[in-house]
Image (cartoon, rainbow, N blue to C red):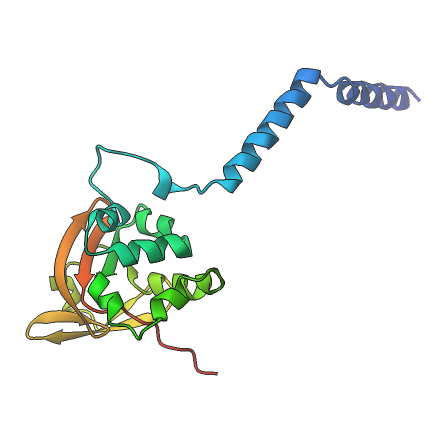
Length: 193
């Protein structure tokens, strides 16, 4: 019977602790919930942290380039900014505005629609490879595993790598990898049903 009294006493103390909530704690919880709600409506992640001292990451290089306005608009529309600023290392194949303009008329406008966000994100992730792959390394690889879980073929033409039919026209080292400027938009292979 003594054990029963001890158990009852412990349960009573625990109940008393939970019943005596401090009003400040409730206010703190309410403020935390409000701040969390506010944060979730804003875009977050590494892509939105400002740092003027580090070597620019892959996304910052694209944003700073006058030849990649369409790519930046597409990245923002698909909301995949964080994929380009991850610690990496990453190899990003960045099509120029001219490469996007070479797509069939209306393609870009259609892809930028909110209902096509997933399709656009898939295409953009097809331009990202894990690793810091220089052009000399790329010439030794037959294919690359892309961030969208598909593969892109690598050919060597006149000693230079050609990625999925796209020529590398410039390369820029980034804080989290390398950006290869390409003259063609890489389109993922369609899945056969």
